[in-house]
Length: 127
Image 1 (tube, rainbow, N blue to C red):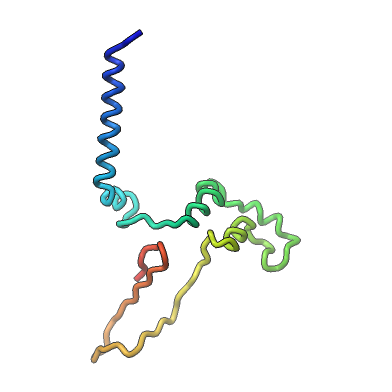
Image 2 (cartoon, rainbow, N blue to C red):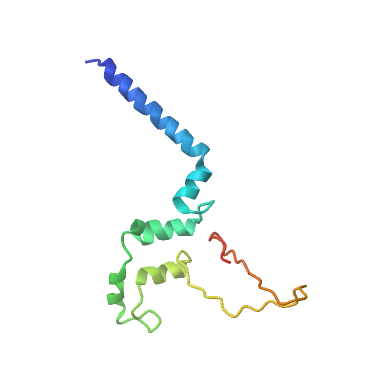
């Protein structure tokens, strides 16, 4: 049975959806800023593999694999096997700490405060 009111309603919902998608696309920089607090989305294919497959979309950290490593060599004993394998493949990150950074021969006559900015790959700049 043909219902013109239902057809108009479905068309209206479709037009509103298309307009909303166009607005999101036109103002994507502002939308990204509101959602993330940064002007760009930081991510690589390795991040997608890590988040999508290794952590099941953030739902599982595979901590249960630590119980399986009691008979492993000392380097893997007590380690999360999924994280260790992902680090071996290069899709999981290694934490790095920088300390005692010395910068010399700066053309400055007095004593001053200087800041170093580090941009590690796709990550946001750290000052």
